[in-house]
Image: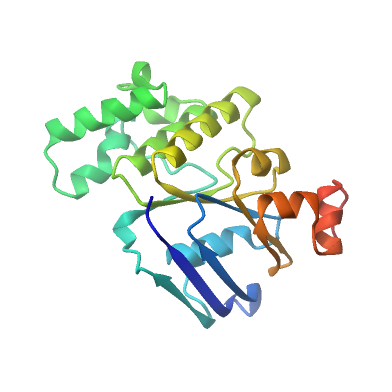
Amino acid sequence: MIECKITGVDVSIEKNSSKLLGPVSFELVNSNCTIVLGPNGAGKTSFLRLLHGLDKPTTGSITWDPSAKIEEQSFVFQSPVILKRNVIENVYYPLMLKGISKKEAITQAEYWLERTSLNHKAYEPAISLSGGEKQRMVIARSLISDPKLIFLDEPTVNLDGKSKSQIEKLLKQVINNGTKIIMATHDLGQAKRLGNDILFLHHGKLLEVGSAISFFENPKTKEGLTFLRGEILQ
């Protein structure tokens, strides 16, 4: 397992004069699976994009210890990014960008398609896959480069129970193999099943940071308690 600490100090993101996140301060230390939890519109996507470097902070700073290279990270978006190619070509695309031979890239892609139960779809157009299959394909593509850290933004939203279960099973295997995960969700069951630590966001503010056990058993804020009760947060 890699050692990793991410520290943010008074970080905020503003776009078009609208504040999407912050200011927030936090310290994430070596968690196997950190869940960024909160209702829709809480700022979860902005937080993930900030950590991965897709968005720059308007104020504040983020430091990594040790420093994390962007090529050691992967990001899975809520809506799968699909290349106009067949499934196996989508999966091995990151390796081609690194100059790896096509023969080796195909071998590695076949391994990940087997891991994600998509080997029988290898030479079908990626666009023809179901929603759950597309998401498993992009997760395979994100893992083929052996990242140390993977960000996932609501990877199972709008998927059926079977697809959700398949993806969660894969993520548990990934965690056990040493890859760290930071994942956004508003699914309480999923957060309980996967999370070691919880960051709870609401209206762009980071209201709680701590272990999953402590958050679910004894939330420190009324907003956290309201959310856990399944009530609507204003």
